[in-house]
Image 1 (cartoon, rainbow, N blue to C red):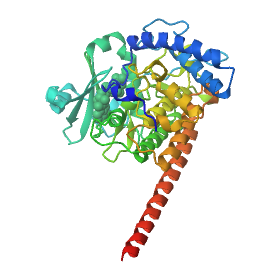
Image 2 (tube, protein in one colour):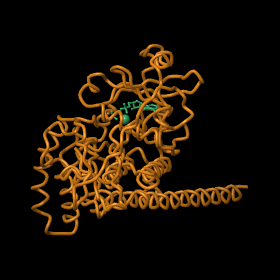
Image 3 (cartoon, rainbow, N blue to C red):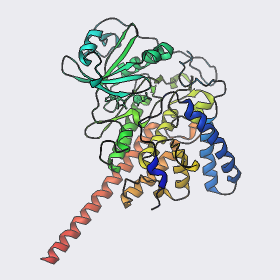
Image 4 (cartoon, rainbow, N blue to C red):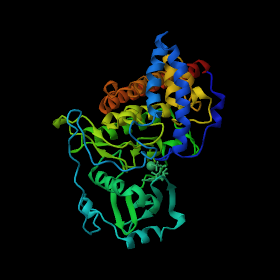
Length: 431
Ligand SMILES: Nc1ncnc2c1ncn2[C@@H]1O[C@H](COP(=O)(O)OP(=O)(O)OP(=O)(O)O)[C@@H](O)[C@H]1O
Ligand SMILES: [Mg+2]
């Protein structure tokens, strides 16, 4: 099995892609255009090239500047509009009104407010010893509440808050207070006082998916665990899209936002960019909004049209699936040109019938792994379709992954049965 030699030189930092990555975009844009002309000129000749073109179109759009946007679009707050294809009309969810109380029993935002005193106590005045992470939003601390509950506490950077975080903070609070699912981080409360903005959520103890793909914690994540994680994430997003009173689009599905429990089950975090989905009963097909998300995971159609639907999360999920089986980050700037955009590279190899060459070199190319890899890439290809209508919905993705996982387990079990039968046979022959 051939393995790209440059693989070892990939970035190891857990950047996860900041919410605003101008350098990355500037770089990717020029790369995309040079790639496009090469592939487009070949695309009429064979089906592989056609498949490549369809992917390239997706990536071109992904890195083309939005039609009416400026370079800051990834961090600007949303315009207050919900549009339908026909009318451009619609409504937004009203803001929650906030009253002071610190009960965590009732799952209403108004009853989930923490005081500064409680927060200072829980973090020992934001002691650096309790700091567990740093992201685009601010600093993350591990803390213990007075009742003993261990929590993660996300403290917004003041500079970020001043510029654009107001809407995002409210968005995250509103969304978090409404969700309840095993595969989504639990919300405990928040603080909004002076220039402090803090979200208190369930502490998930085992790091991020990205860290595990990078083997930061020492162990290699086997394909069975990766399938479990992908299925958990699919269930979490299905819940957001289908089973909430007001469906939610996450908008920042990525490996650094997937936290793992001690049993390697996944919990999706970070609802700062989440938006209420259009109400399908009213005939509204999409929300018109500024583009937000992380470079490498962004739906090209959303980027081009500003039209947000649940299928934007499906696209990001497709990128995540490729990341899960290859171990690579969505953008690998240090690799040679044709390998830099991981999904494009992997889909090309898949279309060429060379899937095995994209398998994470840390995983063994066993029959079970190879079969599952093919099927995961097939699903990823569907999720990465340039047009949202061609992508499956999240429920369908979850069902497909469920079947892949079931077959994978059965395959592995039958192999281990036949292995133990044959070792028993050879042991009795020796006797
Ligand atoms: N609920 C949590 N439980 C445990 N650790 C967490 C939790 N939330 C965040 N972390 C840790 O804090 C780190 C930073 O998280 P944060 O969401 O702020 O940034 P990010 O996901 O890396 O980037 P971005 O700001 O683009 O989302 C995570 O990588 C993770 O290690
Ligand atoms: Mg995050």
